[in-house]
Length: 327
Ligand SMILES: NC(=O)c1ccc[n+]([C@@H]2O[C@H](COP(=O)([O-])OP(=O)(O)OC[C@H]3O[C@@H](n4cnc5c(N)ncnc54)[C@H](O)[C@@H]3O)[C@@H](O)[C@H]2O)c1
Image (tube, rainbow, N blue to C red; front, side):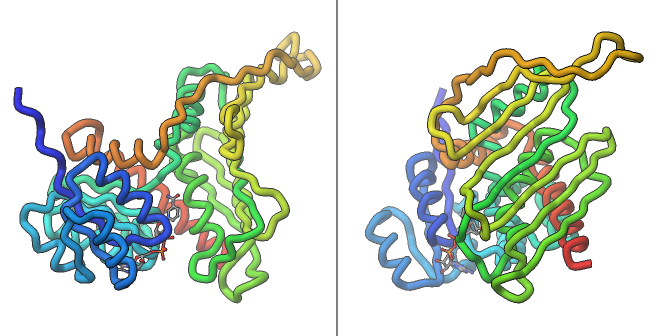
């Protein structure tokens, strides 16, 4: 059998994050184009990837009929327009999170991709993190019992952003994980926060979500905090589990702890503490796994529609949380 040709791919945006993506694309696919509006960036990457064509003009890259797929790692406000243009040009798209800043815009991208049977994959990095994949396995296998609540902590001192607030910059990560773990659209989405440093840009945000099944979730998002935390806690009625991305060797910890009572009707609630277990978690680079997942979807593996729809669920929830925050 003939080996499949590597996907001919182009990338727009070679900034702080884009440079990590392009390195992986060059390893995993056929990097044929790179595009950035900043000349210094173009010069730097032209030296590093002499086999790729380089341009400041996104339209020129999209006009190449041999280009199959595009990765967009430009600033957030540009995502929707660039993704739309690429889909209209018939290219598969992986777009950094969030792909759009309004649910209506995201729905439009999802429809466009579905009509043309193209991949539209949001860059939700954590969904490819082996630690989060382990959390999902634990939730789906029923090992935790019934999941009652989930909460995320994403706090640090800095980086202070002035364009997107903590909800859009940090919250999109936790929200993508919470919705992936619970696989439900929230029926309540409430957020409170304050813009202490830059008017109109909330630095500290607290969010509450409630789901039709009765499960609840919370997110604390802040760049005004003494703790550097990147943590997700899942509380089940039989076991509880913590994913801590600041840990090197114990990314996932399962606690055999839970409430119990002797008789469901009359017994008093007691607590049970058992072993603490640290499952082995693969140390592969999540970004590489994410890029590979995009190529796999292009190759026909996985459910490309579901990936786009899951992305829309995240933007919908962000949109509602923003309304609540501003309300
Ligand atoms: N998944 C993650 O963990 C993660 C982490 C950091 C950033 N990000 C996302 O990556 C994206 C980029 O962030 P960054 O920190 O690299 O930003 P950045 O400002 O460092 O880089 C953006 C680059 O895009 C270029 N650019 C802007 N408009 C363009 C256009 N129309 N065509 C071509 N190039 C254009 C700029 O010249 C710049 O080089 C953002 O969406 C951000 O949310 C994701």
